[in-house]
Amino acid sequence: MVSLLHTLRDHTDEVRCCAFSPSLLATGSGDKSLRVYSTGGGFTERPFSPLTAHAYGVHCCCFSSCGGFLLSCSTDGLALLWSSDSGELLATLEHPSRSPLRVCALSPDSSRLLAGACDGSVAQWDFRSRKLLSCRVVSEASVVACCFSPCGQTFVSGCTNGDLKLWDLQASLLYAQKDAHDLGVTCCTFASQFIIEGCSLEFRLASCGQDSRVKIWMVSQDEGAAWTMKLLHSLGAQSAPVLSCAFSPDGELLVSGSVDKSVTIYDAKLGTLLHTLKQHDRYVTAVAVSPHQGMIATGSMDRSVNVWRIGGELGQTEAESQQASCQGRKLPAHSRLLLTDWTEEDVQKWLREEGLEKLVDVFKANNIDGEELSRLSKDTVTELGIESVGLRGRLIRRINALKAEQNDSDVPDHFLCPIARELMKDPVIAADGFSYERESIESWIRGKNKTSPMTNLPLQTTLLTPNRSLKMAITHWKSDH
Image (cartoon, rainbow, N blue to C red; front, side, top):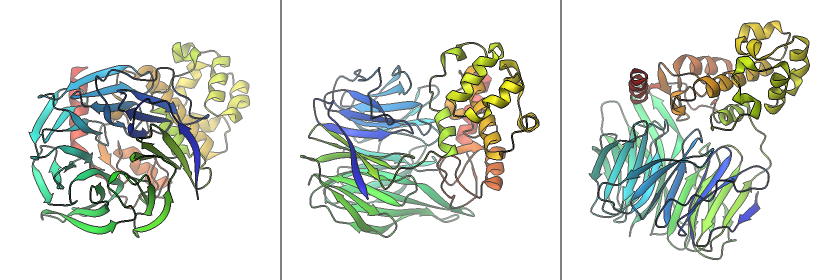
């Protein structure tokens, strides 16, 4: 069941891209602007929207995994990094030759930014320092597609000559799939799940192109062997070039948009067509799937963005609530005070704002003010007589998030463990593609029956991969501070 929720008609030129964070929808257009909407409450546009720093049309936009940052790129040769909370322009990254940029991406741990250019090059920047790491020509044709693998250690580029190429972070070629799409690739994207067995890795990659096909590939490497790319499905439900594709967060669905004005939804594992949507009047240029809320956004040359609901209403999981804490959301007005200066009334107001109304009477009876709140731990919370384990866990996570907002505001968000909201010492990548502190994710897996803390979906494997690049970045940051 797919139903149309909203139609947004704020852009004055064709819509070229759209992207979801856990709480926002961003759209980019040939009118040189980005528009940002809240996904709750009727898709209202944020006060700082539109964002208008690009000199030419916006080709691509994407959010960081945690939702706190928005990246965009344009024909002007610039990749711009924005704050998702305030709309502030945080960084202007210029391609060395100022070649028009057609596509951009952020690594899963947000440590690197990637952009593909019309001169056939791919540029990489370090997120923390904003410094250019490399700019390498990867094709004689324009680079129009690129994406990081869910482990963050490789990326794929797609070009107008039809080739797909797999690279390591040093831009050394690992594998080349010649003529993956006749007449040219238009988009590529990885499913967020991957399989680790010993030293073997498997990823699913989707690509689409001018040949009117959507293809699903298995990208893999066995221990000590070379990388391979095997075609699993070639999907041909659309009758004209396919311009965009996106996996659902659980990897079960694949959505694509085409020049034939249609949007298709496939079962990504079986390769079967589930739905065809035909509400746009012109080419469908962009598709995106929300991380948690069961929604699809489709952008078109008709200047509109349609937002669709997949299935029924999905309730917010505890992991989503935790995710919301790392989006850079604004804290209530009283939180401008130090936590230790909060009154009992401030604490009670904060509980209500965090959806913890059930605890207000308990805190009132125990005269807990900001000083006492800051000292609460797993052990002391139990002494308050809160019987629900889930409620105690939510309270501790909210307190940790609050402390992170107040005391660690200078720490880059991707350096904080999504579970503990503390600076990571031993970051590892789980099967959901997110990085966590090893101790926190191991504890989570033992207590949560092998589900992802970020998506609440089952983890395909409990094996963890050390994130050495993130650990090195954190070490450098600590030495500078």
